[in-house]
Image (cartoon, rainbow over all chains, first blue to last red; front, side, top):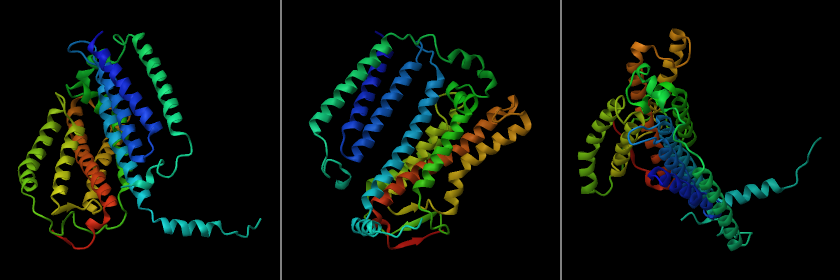
Length: 109
Length: 248
């Protein structure tokens, strides 16, 4: 068993932990964190996959991971921002809008 | 904090333990499946490594990762910078166009450690980012690493609480888009010169890559720092309100 294989299995394990977190977690924040754990697992898997021998490595997965990290950060920032915005919605305002939209309207055909 | 975003708090409709158990079993099954697939797969001889090594002289840089990012698969990087910009556009507020790049916020408590860090670490970070950008041509480094370091310097500045970068000012907007603009402009110019998008001519490829990387570094740094600061501003809007006086 080579060390790359160990890292790949560990990456798959992280992916599974993140996946179950996304499915089980109740809080949105936990779901976002679990998504990040999932992503880290995939990055780890790809980096381990890229290693061919002691000094030879495949640069394409490395470039993919580099791209992926930035996209993951951007996605997390967007998700967190949406989360905070949803939290900041004024609930009484929302309730009033809901009641207004629930009023029966005349529908013209 | 953020209690109402918790679906458990709002009253989960299903049996929690049953759903946990079934999810655990399913994910464990998936993991076993993936590991068996991995053990039966020999990835040693597949990959694009020989191809990259073969054509590294044509790329204008000697670091294979940078060659893949900025030359062989430059489309990916172009689209990545576009994705980052789209996220920033989605997150940043749209007002406040006519403000200064820097602003001074109301004087907060003086923090000795933070101000020392700002004085000593932030300039070093800027220099180190420049080094990483330059080193990316022949060893690990490049636009993303340098951009992340610069963004760290911006966050350090933000933490001090005295000066803030106004990410909605027109200078910041220009810096945010300059990476994508230069990337697209170089790509389009190369259609005219070479006949296809982002195919660098052999003699000027390294300088073009450096130009794109330098502009991308600035855009990435400002984008990441603005994401951080807008998240802070959305979560704690009260901190930022009130006595703001613009400088410069």
